[in-house]
Amino acid sequence: MTHEREVLDALGTVRDPELDEPVTSLGFVTSCTVSADGVADVRLRLPTYFCAPNFAWLMVADAYDAVSGVPGVRQTQIELEDHFASTEINRGVAARAGFVRSFDGLAETELDELRTDFVRKAMLAATDRVCRPLLAAGRTPDELAVLTLGDVPQSPDRERLRARRAELGLPAGEDAPLLVDPLRGEAVEVEALPLHLRKARLTGISLQANASVCRGLLRERYAMVGIGEEEDR
Amino acid sequence: MYEKNGEKYFVVDTHMHYWDARPENWVAGHEQYAKGWIECFHAYMGLAPAETHWPLEKFYKIDEDTLMRDVFEDGYVDVAIFQPTYLKEWYRDGFNTTEQDGALAEKHPGKFIVNTRFDPRDGDAGLKELEEKVARWGSRGVKLYTAEWREGSRGYTLKDREAYVYLEKAQQLGIKNIHVHKGPTIWPLDKDAFDVSDIDHAATDFPELNFIVEHVGLPRIEDFCFMATQEPNVYAGLAVAIGGLMHARPKFFAKVMGELLFWVGEDKMMFGSDYSIWEPKWQVEQFVDWDYPSDEFSDYPRVNAASKKKMLGLNAAKLYDIHVPVEYQLPGPGAPGVLGAVGVDERAGAKV
Image (cartoon, rainbow over all chains, first blue to last red):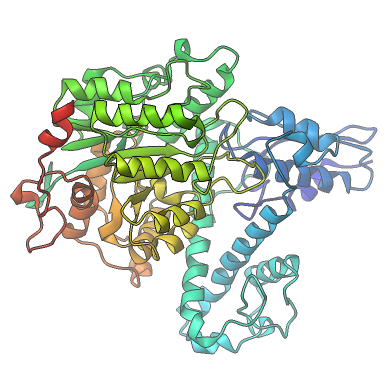
């Protein structure tokens, strides 16, 4: 017997690739049920009718994979609602048809590169979240340059940074430098650090501001609160 | 014009509309897109102060008197720049065409600047149409919406060869200002539709043109800032940044403003209300009053009355050669607004 709680936990691992936040805390999950015979049915929504279809696809596809992986789930139905490309996305994901086939003639490649680009942004944003408190506490950029991930106090932000780096195949162990280039994974040199940290902060602010606008629009669009929805952090 | 604490502000609204989104203008078979579009706009209005919200019925299409009152009488705007958005796939007579804007501008000489548009997918016929529109309406700028749907296509980028043909033509016709608005779709759909790197290419290759990135590149503020810092002819259009964040999300507004002031700078940021998504009145008033809320922002560039004068009107006046009365200019030679040689009456009014 599968419980909805486990399916919801699985959905909590599905992130909006642009915002680097779980679809649950963003309020995108409106319904999640599991029948006695193991059919999971999940309803998703987005802040606008015209949210970018490629990112919408990734969320639906990731939700499909995450829910399908829950022990006891025999069949998975993910329905994105109220979106201009709902039909193509829902049908394409369910049929495992891929993005290119589902948007016939409108797309050239699958979305791996797009996803990677946004994990890099998420990694930069996570770098800012780890470094800003250190700088605020008086550490200098020069000091940060020689730190490793393991030198930084354990925190959810540090683990987020580690996870994003691991996703990109970049060094993520305790001994890895704290500050690395998001493309090549090399340690950032001291002279390049102020700009690197500035870019990290800007990227973090951009993601947060976007998430904030998305929350505002979702609230205008729907009166009902999503399952697991949380306010801005 | 707006006055507060003895400071006088000349206001140029660089981004506003006069649309018709009523159901009778929806294209048969595409009603869901027309409805989705205007309802999405209406949700954005919800980010403004509650007392300025309108019911959807009013939002579909406003009348001339309402616009003139909201923008010029109550909204402090001296000159407003129309930015058309066609969307003819969804709206039968267009969502907001150059003609709709131009007809209103003709009735109110000196109040409006009528920008037009082009779509690189329109071929030779489109080039001819651009020429006619510039001649008819005296346009000095174009608004490009890269996510515009056209038959099977879901958009374009400025990297396309055809886009360069149009930019060359626009330049020949005397167009100075290219306002680019990114939307959620593009061809191919697997690429990030909001990516601004195509503007970077075009800005490098057309150094005589000014590229105003609308909505500060939202949701790609970071990419926009990295690019704008390297391109002298790239500007930030503040529409949506002010309307969508200043009231609803003041903490993020302060952070976004701080970043924009750092990377782009107060000489290259321009106010736009995005009317009638939002009324200019509250935006102008709150923007003039705005400052960073706390010490947390102490390492961002400071703003003062002069910064806001530039952003609210003087920077745009420079780009569009709008005459600014001397009491609204900044002191000192070479300051924005001082050089405006051609009166707006001559510029916008001559042909309108």
